[in-house]
Length: 409
Image (cartoon, rainbow, N blue to C red; front, side, top):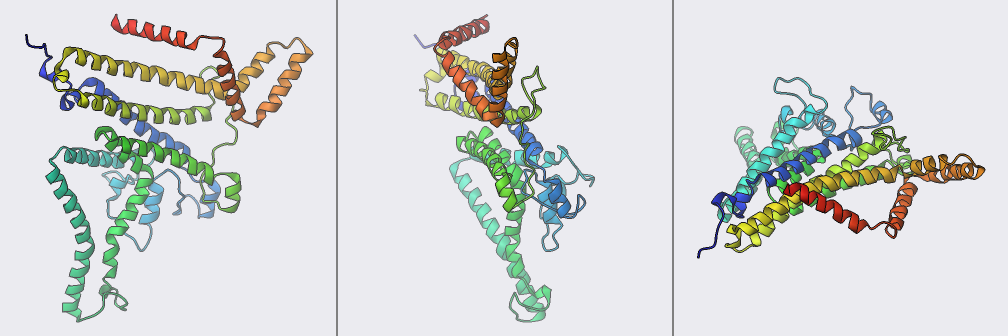
């Protein structure tokens, strides 16, 4: 008796799986999170200090600081008298197609579309035969070398014929100094560096999501964390007293929790949202790769077996539900940990009938002014202590069982 098999469109072959709605939803979630990280990072780490701007000549002058923002660097580069930009301004996000100057989120549109186009081309090349990939790599390498050497040689030979023999450098006539054409490709690379401050992790992240590369996804996450770390280091008070590069430091105090029922302060919500978006981007992107790797390792018969297909669908569906639930729980517990000092002080304040409660309240206020690190540490100690009181595994098991029943119904 022949083994029952599923329709061809529902098998666990990689080309079929890449068109499944669950896989596409995970990839779209990861892509949206990546773009939202870029936007959040720009709003938090993308400005220079007012003093630095004033020292550089004011808002209307050309200035640049190593903030997470690309248009300032591109304008600084384009206003230089010795360098011309190779890409048009609308691809940099400086102007629209009509030539009107852009600002805000509109400056991201054209570079992001360029990153998406490069990603689509790269993914298309990945699915070509190895021989074609080899030839494409050779063409790109030879093209870069030709771009560097051919304009230099052609201009030199032409001027030798017209003006007579001469060296390509050190001449009084600038038209006879051809050596500068050798550096044009490298100037283009430097131009890409200014765009890469913001869009290198976006390009790497998109390639990782849609090209199924764990290495590129983790590189993009590492880049974001590196930007946060470098910003914190360069805005540290001890560093800025010696060298001030103009970065806008974050407020020293996280502020009062005034949002969502006293759970979040505006600054903590912004920082927590960046962390949560990084988690979602990495979790959703790597989940797609892990699920497809599992399917690729299955025997050919198992890829058509209804039991394996149903099991794969259940795992992916459960992953979507768990990712949403766990992300919400992580955000909630992080907010509670940060504001745990306020919770303790409010709890003690409920006992304001005795002198002892007032003394404890003052003591807590005095101790917890040293920072939110103490508050988060106290929260961890309390949760760790509750492990011996509350059966966490039993509670989580009940929740998972309830979620399974809801999905089955």
